[in-house]
Every structure is written in structure tokens, then in C-alpha cells.
Length: 159
Image 1: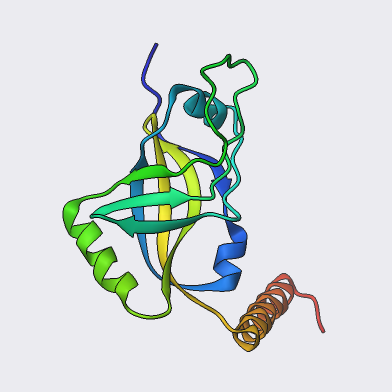
Image 2: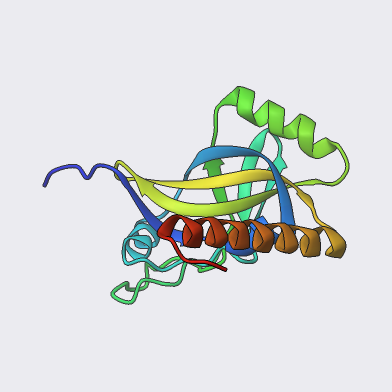
């Protein structure tokens, strides 16, 4: 069987971009069991409650739900187990330094397959306050309305 190429998105955490201000993004590999890979290839995963943690020089992903593989037997995996992330040593040391600062956390943004390997995109993020969220929504709506107006004007419609 030929090795697959490209990027196949499995799960995305849209709420993270709303709840956090993203400062830096890292791509990490995942240490998975066989039935977890099969479940991911079927397109099942949830990142909503997920977060990453640095312990003893290793990065761990907690709270990500990968449901049990339906065709699995007694060898099936636990859906919410913690999973080790594979990063370069200098990236881990950077994460250790940044997370020691107050207010920064590691949040998973997306889970995907890249050239056949399971990858997770984690972000170094700072939590947003309620007024920051409202301001971000207002800016997005204003930008969308401006694009609509320029699009209508380009097509020859008058306001």
C-alpha cells in the first residue's frame, strides 16, 4: 500500500481560538496505541477539554477524547488517557520557560494526519477576559461587513 501524502484533518478546537489569545504554535507528534490510530483514521476525536502539561522534561496531552475503536477487542484503549507528545528538546525547554510565566497555558488546536503520522498542533496561549472576547467578535463582524460592502460595490450594487 502506498504511503499517504498531505494533511488530513481529524479534529479542530475552534473554541480555543475564541477563549485564548494564541501566542505561539507548535506541531508535535503523538504516542498512540493501535486502536487509537484506527479510531482517528475513522475521524473520531474531541479536543474541547484538552490541555497539555510539561512534567519531568516531557510534554503530556490530557483530556483529549479519542473514542474506543468499534471493531476493537479487549485490547482497546482508554478514551481519555494522557498521551505523550513528541517535540524537539529545544521546543520543550522553550515551553518549560514560557509556562513557568504566569497566565500561559498549552492548548491543542487541531489533530491531523501529516504524511501518515498523527500530529497535534498545540498553542502557547493566554486566556481572554469576557470583554476581550466581545471586542474580538465586534472586530470580526466589522471586518466581515466591510468585505461585504466592498464586494457589493465591486459588483455594481449600490447601498
